[in-house]
Amino acid sequence: MQRHSRKRGRPALACAAAALFSAGAWAAPDYPTQPIRLIVPFAPGGGTDMIARVVGKKLGERLGQPVIVDNRPGASGIIGAEAVARSAPDGYTLLMATTAISSNGSLYNTISYDLKKDFAPVSQLANAPAVLVVNPGLPVASLQELIRYARERPGQVNYASYGVGTAPHLVAELFQQSSGTKLYHVPYKGGGPAVLATLSGETRLLFPSLVPVMNHIRNGKLRALAVASDKRSPSLPEVPTFRETGMEFETGTWFGIVARGGTPAPIVARLHKEIVALLNDADVRKSISDEGAEVVASPTPEAFGKLIQAEADRWAKVVRTADIKIEK
Image (cartoon, rainbow, N blue to C red; front, side, top):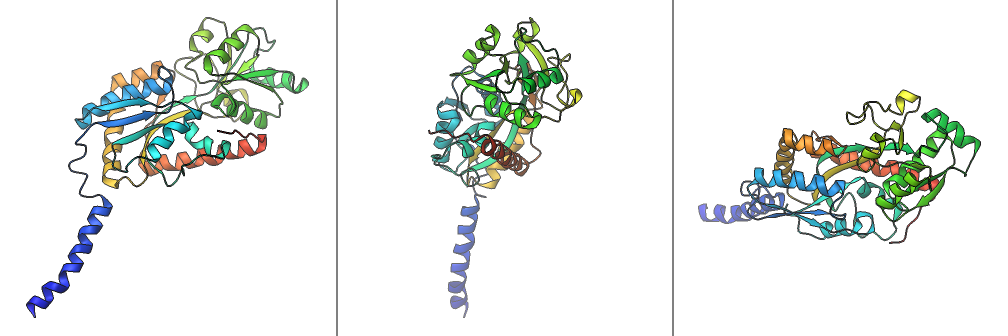
């Protein structure tokens, strides 16, 4: 009877062991045991890359393994995101995610990953609010003056973007839908040319984050009319928010880290814990603030996942209304 009882118990023990392996509980105590790769889906030198390097360095120090930044630019961040979606779900390949991961699904028909299934949200890192800047030659001194000016000239006031489907393009479309204006879109190949076009007067408006235009605002070469955040930017305290000027309009670019979908929950929890801790470091906060962004740590990975999905729903509506489509 005892031998029979032991035999019957073996399948149950095997099932329990398999459950532990599938849940990944075995992996948490030893993670990480090798370097971690943080894929940045944009070129080196930009705001996304800078934040990734600051966070990656501190995260590596806290985890006891180096975090290697790997730039994989192309197709508005899709190439880098696809690389993470094809990686092993073991916590050793992470993605430096931005707003683009939420908007690309409605812009492109050929994306090979699923936003919900292929990524495991870890935490938001920062938020860079959009700012509306105009060439000083445009005869407006406030947001309300601009709206009146544009309504009187439908389709005649042009604006620059970094390209079709990029954040400044989508923010401008959202602005038009919210303000009842009709602007003329001039897409450029990147942020540098778009900023230069607005500086020269070739285009009249731009909806970037604060990062690439901060110095131009301070030296008077661009006029900032409003910041799309819930409070004034500490970097430009003299510039009002959209809400202060009578318009409910909050948007910008967020930055965060996601892992491969299916990464064991204990690993995701460990990463979240260390990221939240490093975001309290004074040097990290200053480095991110110097770029015109605000540190924002997600209270839980699930909260970050809700933000990603809410942004996907928001931008899908904007894209449908504006009828924007891009072929990869």
